[in-house]
Amino acid sequence: MHIFTVKNLTESLKRYNYAIDHNAKNSDYALYQKAIILGLNDKMFEKIALLNDVIGKYPNSGIRPLALFELAGTYQDIGQYEKAYTEYSAIVNNYKSNTQITNKALMQMGLISYNKGSLDESIENYKAVIANNPNADTKREALNALEEIYINDKKNPSEYIEFMKNEAGIDASNINSDSLNFVTARIFFESDSVDNALNSLNQYLDTYDKGYYALDARFYRAESYLQKKDYKAAVKDYEYIIAQGYNNYYEPSLYKAAVINFNYLKNYNKAIDEYKQLSDVIKDENKKYEAQLGIMRSAFMINDFENVNSYGNFILNNPLTTDKEKSAAHYYIGKVAVHDKKYDVALIHLNKVINENPNSNLAAESRYLISLIYYERNEIDLAKK
Image 1 (cartoon, rainbow, N blue to C red):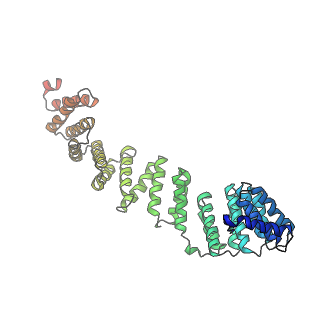
Image 2 (cartoon, one colour):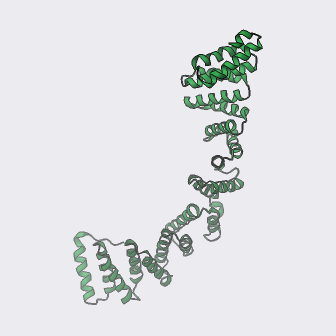
Image 3 (cartoon, helix red, strand yellow):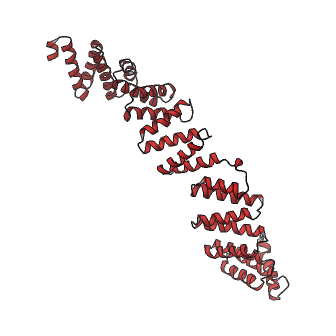
């Protein structure tokens, strides 16, 4: 670290110039410090020239590796990354015994490689740090960098785990491989890479079926299957989550399983069961209403008069219900009542459809059903009306 105050900057520069001009014993150090001062004054190219003087004129100086490191850092600051990489490489090649500065150089080489997209080169640089007896802080920094590359960029946690175990000398039992594998899968999921997400989630669940993130993985896999319109696979995972009891994914899993069973799999009994469970636990009145609507519609599809009548009346008395949905509720109750030969109930509701929404398709259907009722009752005159 170079610490200069504004007050002594000029005086320091004078002293260093005197040492340089008189070729003093410490002129290598004076040149180096003068370069630092020039850099502080944003005279980067003059700084570079002086650092090159130090490196060229004093090949055996103890200050030379510091000058190389400072030169490399300056090239980095002005965006000349290839030159920076070359100077850092010179440190690594020529000062192997100075592990502290060599590891600093390797860390910067890893960063430069990463920023230009050379992930494998970056990995090799960070691995070289780990192999070069770094201090605890540098080791942690290198391991964090490697984890980011393997997990976030290469999407390959297993390779990272193998490196930790076989090259870094860290006991694999101390690695949260469960977490690493799940993070990779989640990254794919969140980036809408559905096929990669499914592949990673399947691998995770095959290995960690009872893992810490197993429930999360099941939900993400269900969502991924849903995006691919693989409804049977999606509902299987949603229903697995439901079977585990109340959890973070319980309500959305109930809702999506019910919707899939109603709309795509035509499993109306399942849909009724799931919509009922959802209605019991949901606090939001809009969602509760949607669940009750789902029960009524599902029950109607299988002529379940009890549930159509019960939940149809919930819909009729719900302030959230639209006129269109009220007509549908009356029609559903009426039609199922016809199926069960409960003609008096049917007539009440079918006539409400006609009176409240006379020009709708449901009104036309209701008129037809009313005629059938009168024929069944042998009330021919009324049937003809």
